[in-house]
Amino acid sequence: MAKHIFISYSHKDSDIAECIVHQIIAAGYTVWQDVYGIQPFDRWEYEIKNGVDEAAAVIVVWSANSGDSMWVKKERAMALEKNILMTAIQIDKTPLPPDLEGIQTVAHRNNLIEQVEVVIAALRTFVPNSLLRQYDTVLPFDAKKALVQQTEINRLTKASGNVDLVCVPYVSSNRFCKTFLIGEPTAVISAPMMMQVILQCQKPAGEHIVFDVYKHIIDHKLPFAGLWITGPVANNKSPFDDSASFTVDRGNPEQWYDIVGITEAAFKRAKRDFGITRFQFFFAGPAALLLGVGNTLRKFWTIDTYHREKDGYFHVINIFPE
Image 1 (spheres, rainbow, N blue to C red):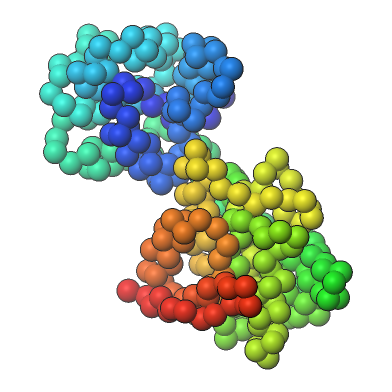
Image 2 (cartoon, rainbow, N blue to C red):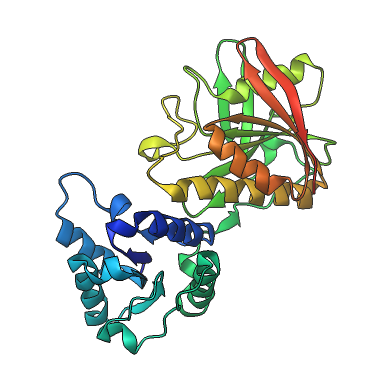
């Protein structure tokens, strides 16, 4: 069964291939690239063959370097043998080999982004939509009922402090991430003036940052209506497991794009469900990820951003819609 888009390239063109990979992942596709698909102790040829066999399409990064690459030649042959969709992005003026001459490719031009956009448009036509990264509404949410009365709930409990919060599944990714509405059991989230967004991609020792945010909001005598966005959890554990470790793999760019995508999807649903246009934003994770998330969110909403110090959270900067 097709699972991904396979990238065939020479390692001498790694920088250009990396740019192409990121643009395709940002468009919603899973990409197989040897630097991510082959692990220590794996047999190269076996893993590459599997990567090609499970590809919905193969994209060759064509250049003088790939023309000299034995592996690029082998990967093209594997794709042709399996009758897998294949095209090439020509990054220099090196003539195409005979096996690519009969296939529509993207000719060399000075704008790589435009070249990749042409390929992505073709993928939308020829590759099943089921391969795309998708964000689904998990369950309908009844704004007239308390959180504890919703169809499906989970609980976060902090024994030291007697805090019991209810989490309701909200938006889910078909990749790594999840989101939950979160609040006190009897809370009714109908039309809050402001919602606290808690994006958790790291976990401080001993507990979720949710409790820190809850304490900050209650101490300031504000209503707590949370939107908890969880990044990938190591070893596929539940985010409610006390031993769960939230992390972002620097070697897996798809995780980073999934976090940005699900954050936007959750914000859009909250605006649709509750009419909210202003959020308080609390974040634990790599700084580079915050840049990607902020760049997306500033297109739509006003975001009050908080910075965490040892003695609590501090409102440091606002992001206003463009």
